[in-house]
Image 1 (cartoon, rainbow, N blue to C red):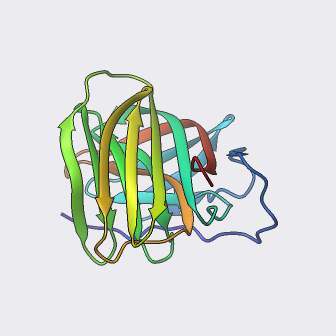
Image 2 (image 1 turned 90 degrees about the vertical axis):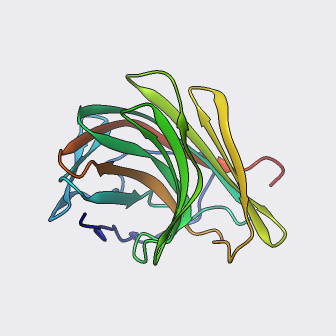
Image 3 (image 1 turned 60 degrees about the horizontal axis):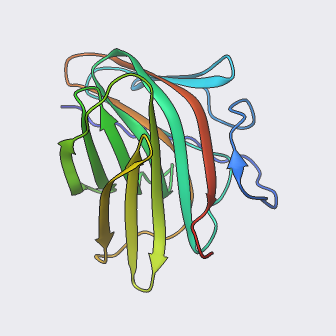
Length: 197
């Protein structure tokens, strides 16, 4: 299986007010690479991923310092794969916590970077069609608490105390299966400080 590093750079950043709600035309990366393509799709955003590859794109904001909650409403419109949101990451290095739901009805939380480490799942998540994925990267001393909701239900909660990632960038991601392309439409993206921050 081929792994890809397909990232976006952040444009010039200004002081951020919260919550941030994506107007995908405002600084989200568009274009084509070996891994696939990112394009504006009406008011939404579309990632098309070639077989065996993964794309992740950053929102044009920095995360708040004490933890963040990010959310998207998205649909796997074609092919096989998974999609969702990520936080506490860097689009350029590939470090991030990734929260995913698959077309096969599985959810997972993965720590990505030089390697990949499954922190939760894959676990069953009934339902199909358009899904609302919400994730929290919360700072708690020397660890990060990670929570994931799917269609308003809490489906996973884990902590990472093994060289945890700190606040950075957040965004959306999609990955295809080894043999089929995946096309994911993101209707929305939002970020806000985690509770108590």
